[in-house]
Length: 284
Image (cartoon, rainbow, N blue to C red; front, side):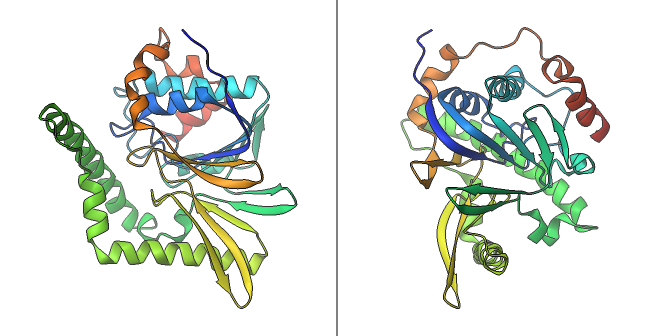
């Protein structure tokens, strides 16, 4: 297997992988992780989808994602796991450090003299709180079914020589209320960052990759969102003194299967350290 040179970056932020669900593009995530060499890797929430976790469905490719993260840690990368709403069960362990892995619910990084405030973003979402949480969880299962249906529909479309379509994107983009909510989310995060004096505010949660400057009363901050690895296949990379939104090259999909070696076993405790395995088992 031909080895390609890894791209170096100061910081990589990746979120909303939703490992353990059908819609997760685990093969693409593995390919991406193999291609980079970050000094700091931030896993900004909804990494393992504990809401929809099923012991019968955690394929080898999903296991391999976790293996790649641990390989990075072994090579010196500092990894921060910031919890989101789908993996909120891990929040009771916030502040825990195991080697190069830190588990927390938020993070402040100083990069080139500027401060970045990083958190998942579900704190702004009333649909993930209280009795609405149950509806959100049920909606998560419906979303996973929609992704499954979309997957097989696109297989048929491509076999007929037609372009792929995204049902969920079309639904979200056609609903004015959803578009307005995303705008409100970004503005709220930006205004809070301005109040606290942060140069950057970085979120995930809404599956909408974004980089925009938010200004108010003569002050400015940059709002960034890492998107997701269900539909957009995006991350944030800080390199050469600036933040960039990375989009996975869909043309690379043909190379993926031949470039990835899968583990012989797909048992989660064999992949994780005892302490991290304990986190997962306690959360279920």
